[in-house]
Every structure is written in C-alpha cells, then in structure tokens.
Length: 254
Image 1 (cartoon, rainbow, N blue to C red):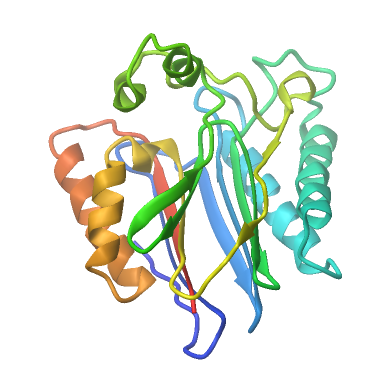
Image 2 (cartoon, rainbow, N blue to C red; image 1 turned 120 degrees about the vertical axis):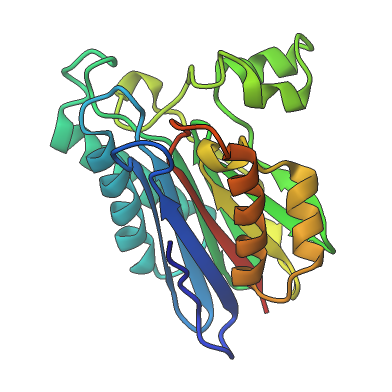
C-alpha cells in the first residue's frame, strides 16, 4: 500500500492507493502529476473479463496525463483533448474499432484537472469523482451503468447501486468505439479547503458517502483522510476473499 504526497507550499496535496484486493491481477491504474499551481489526476479501472484490461487502464491514464500536462491552459478543451487522445491510443493499440466490444480491452476513466482556480472533471464508466466542501459532498459524477439507470428511473435507491447485480454492466467505456461517450461536468470554482476524491467501484462499493464526509471532517491531510477510509474499506471487506481491485486518489486544495 503506497501513499504519495505533495510537498508543503504547493497549491494541492494528494495521496494515492491502488491495490489488487482479493484478485490475482490489479487492473486498476491511478496516477497524477502536479506542479506548484496545477494538478492532473487519472484513475482507470480495466474491465474484468476483458483481455488486456490492465494494459488498457494504464494506457488511458498515462496518455491522459502526458497530454494534459503539456497543455497551455487548464480548460474544458484541454481535458477533452487529453481524454480523446487516450481513447485514440486505446483504439490504435488494441483495435477496438475492428473487434467486437466483448473482445476489445476496455477501461473506465475518472479524470480531474485543477488550475487557475477551477476544476474540470470527466468520467466514463463507473469510476467516480467526488467534490467535497466544508466536509460535505457537493458533486458526484454519474455512473454509466445499468444499475445507475435503475436508480434514475426510481426502481432502486441510490445505496442499492452498490449491491445491484447490474452495477458492473456498463453503458459507456473507453477502448470501444461504440461505447465511447465521456461525460464532462460543469467547471467548478475551487476554494482553499476543497477536497476531491477519485475512486474505482472496488473502493466506493465499501465506503459510503457518509463515511467519506465523516472521515474528511476528522482529517487534516489527504493521506490521513485516505487512511481512515481504507480502514473502513478493510472492515467492510473482511471475510470477502474475491473483492475487486480498489484504488483512490485524495486531493486537498490549499
């Protein structure tokens, strides 16, 4: 288990974890790049049962960071260009345009770009981005899953998404030309004290929104916040031998 933390004095502080859980192979990929005044974060979850899911998630995350780190500005246009380039690299590498969707390596994507007092968020699939302010959740990305559609239609409650048999049936993903349809949130005007959480479904399935808020209010650093949530994750997965890969990135705005 690893934590990576920015030096004091930077605009952002971050911590990261990416673990296989109860699986032999880790198909999650979480990474970020920060400067004194910009921060770029990517978290991707390769689809289980698809050949090369681990390669797909790594390709998507690294391509996104490579592209947006070289952008002139942090904007909706730059995050879109970086996500689109990641999709192009996946299609070039794995032939997702030529293969049936069930055969092409695919991945989810949760992306965050911070700079100039604003945050830009993009997601595709069921990896999530949370924005918290004052210890309360302000924004959560939408899942692109059958279970989430059931929630929107009123068939199930929000918390039931975690245990729904349709939670892993994704309507959108990266690496498949037909299912590529990223969702971009409205820009967020950031303030000192804001916090962000990027996480895969293997994480948020076992850590509730109430847990995220409660642990944040008791934490002065992103690493402590993450450590507290990981203790909850460990308690809730105790006795489960095949729990999914789990990954998360916590970010504080200074």
